[in-house]
Length: 279
Ligand code: AMP
Image (cartoon, rainbow, N blue to C red):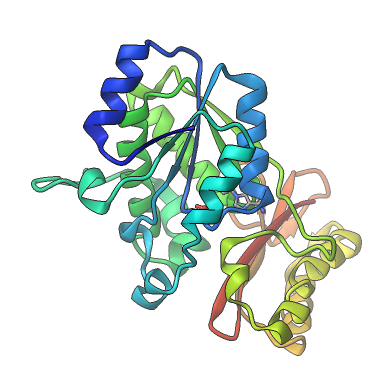
């Protein structure tokens, strides 16, 4: 596996080699099987697979979360090598945001005020900044994102539509990889205490409970019961909601036909976990 830290170097290399059919998997590291699923999909579909590891400061609305974000670079490099990744881009902040960088404002419509957008102000602007820069640098043909970050996938789709230079990029959304007990894999799981780790699968159990209990009509009592269930199992929920699976507009009255996604964000101790389930 090649490793580049400098933007100019990776760009020169990709141009010189004239690599075609490039698959790209952007990550923030502390890699787990969910990330490696994305790499595997890229390897299946593309001639050349590029991964990046960059803990993007501009998408953290909470400075403590940024400071404590798990960093396991040695193990990450070994995992990427074992997965036959062709190239790893591992930039410093100054490579992504060089002196004089000025961020555009990204028009995200209601995605910016709903759910993650509401609870993490500025988060999706930061996501767009880093993805915009990384796509500009890597110039991939296909990009791979995880359904675990459902709303983020919609934001990236919007970015791809908004930027003419990105119109030829195809995006693939890969299903959420879970632990045997149902907990969605996440780098932040590394920060759970043993007791919290035991409690954490309740988030997925609650989503599954919603899926079995949901009936057409008013969904508010079900959402309130689900929220109560999470609280009783030690979580501090920020939201637990049903939304249109295509637009993410909240749905409180369901006709039994509209495709829905249940979305949840909840704190366990100081760790914020998110998950979702298409119903
Ligand atoms: P992150 O390193 O958390 O920024 O994630 C990098 C990419 O991996 C994003 O596209 C995530 O949606 C995806 N991802 C994270 N966790 C999972 C998971 N459990 N299953 C599948 N994809 C995931």
